[in-house]
Length: 325
Ligand SMILES: C[S@@+](CC[C@H](N)C(=O)[O-])C[C@H]1O[C@@H](n2cnc3c(N)ncnc32)[C@H](O)[C@@H]1O
Image 1 (cartoon, helix red, strand yellow):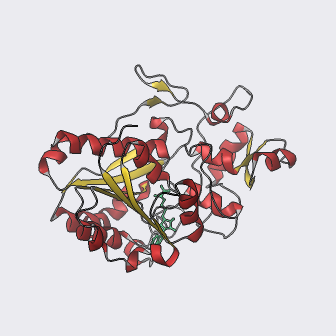
Image 2 (cartoon, rainbow, N blue to C red):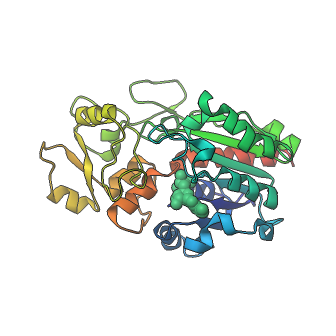
């Protein structure tokens, strides 16, 4: 991808889902901040030339962001979703893991041309409308034109998974805001065929598994870093369990490699997933070198914005900034 000449900084970078999207869209990487040592190590291993602040150095709560003022065009990040996720207690601002105030502080200290914040789609539920208005939109609206909050579905961008994410996008320049168009679908979901769109694959086809007369999107992959520690199950719900059974895919005891997955066949004979398979279902490049124990690699994958979705958002922001020049 040709360089856009735009510089991007990433907060809460995790294993790099959104970072990959911005890189593919032609942004120059300025820095990533991530508190988890293993996730930061993934970024360093994947991109040795990137400036990655990890562990204590990556803790966004302690950073003076003014050092980046004038050096960044777009700030992006996905603060932890546990305070808002349906899978948690949904305590919002009362949850000490709520880091949206830090996202807002970083944006107002750096004052990039645009920001992109993302989270689980539950944050777009009416339950959190007051939270979003008070803690995210109102403080940013002083300096930015904030776009209508948008929920995007990863399957509309070719990812073989049910995965919705909410995006908050804002621009410093009114002209750029006027030129912004939220990404529209590039892919038809399996079983549908909309004219002009690429045909999206079901998860069995995406994994290259034999035809069993049934295929569909994978259920949402759960992050193994939320909930029970050290689990290697990506199961999110009872309905996900049923769907995986229909797909004849075994979502528990995910193996670190494809070789070990093949060696330990699931008791019911269904296809045992491995870390590279789960990465593929999340839209990561095949060679993305996740670091850490199996649950830790799966956590980085399950926390991520699928890169193809991040790419489209990054592209849409770049297009708006280019139009405003
Ligand atoms: C939802 S994940 C972000 C995933 C990432 N956007 C991606 O696409 O791969 C949130 C991340 O925030 C990190 N995090 C939590 N508290 C943090 C803090 N105080 N400073 C920096 N990172 C933090 C978590 O470790 C986690 O990796």
